[in-house]
Image 1 (cartoon, rainbow over the protein chains, first blue to last red):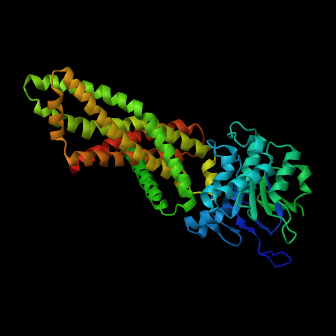
Image 2 (image 1 turned 30 degrees about the horizontal axis):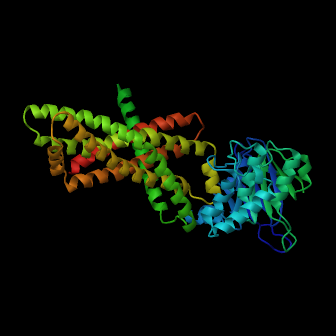
Length: 231
Length: 259
């Protein structure tokens, strides 16, 4: 297992994951604290299932995926749910609840999974809405909002608990380079006390050229073998 | 020769698989109750009230109409025909058994299946297809807590309330029907109340709870079982509606058997 210079355990680690349609090899990757890592691959490569495997939403028949050194699938169901609340997850297609406003979508994880007082929740939601420039569209339902607003709301929901690790599936699809850069910056967050930033793991079929210089690593999947494009 | 037998075997196996899946689903739903987090209880409570509003409150007009017309027709005929042979005293028992205990709960449950069961399946299937259920799991919210339990308990409360409403309206409609057929209101109330026992009331409430559980669980099960895409949603609605209706009659038959 790779470790950072200060000996930190990887926040996210994949070992021997066979990706769909690629019997040739298996996938292995470690994401260290404060890193932003992008894994790109075509639609059939199976990269889109990596976040779901890490979160225990999809079973990894072979291989392991560890988050903060823990295999989520070995936990009880209650512990799995509690563990996932420590992470931020933006699924492909946003996954916003269509019968809730964008504001309520961001508010939901806080209302359901935290013991914050209502005014604390409202305060946090207002900050997230302002950060994502969603205040004016906050009352709209996902069907009434445009793709950019929906993506911003889904990111806001993922950041509701201010997690240390964020997993984003296809976060830049349909967005301009400028908005994609903004999404990435917000996901990474500001500098922490130790000078690092939030750990971000992104999967998708491509990454805008503009963003390749803004992340630590871009890993391309071909025949399921890890091929670092740029380190 | 073996094809029809194999066909029967296949459909029986499919049906048993579905019933087994439903049993596991019901077990998981009940098992999820204690793990509902404190904060989640407030959200689930609000969803429960919403479900009761959709299922019970918005169905009041339909149930009053169904009960009023059905009961007026049945009781006026019963009074007319039994009156010819002077068997007015049997009217009370007839009304209690046929309407209050048997047909009232069944007709109410069928109305709720048509209104809310279909809506639950379609809504949950859409949630599944749009990956909203997966997103819920991803953010640490159990879909049983957020989607299933409010609907299950909402249906149990709503169906029970609506059955009581159906029976109340049927007794009032019966009063009017009996009056129209020349039977005095006092005599009508007398024979009906004399026939009504605590066991009839208990059976009515028992059916409300069980029919409500069927309507809360079966459509939720089919809605969340959708896998492939939007084209599967109408099939899920059909399967859930047919299954719910069959289950309601089966439960009703079980009540008759155990009495």
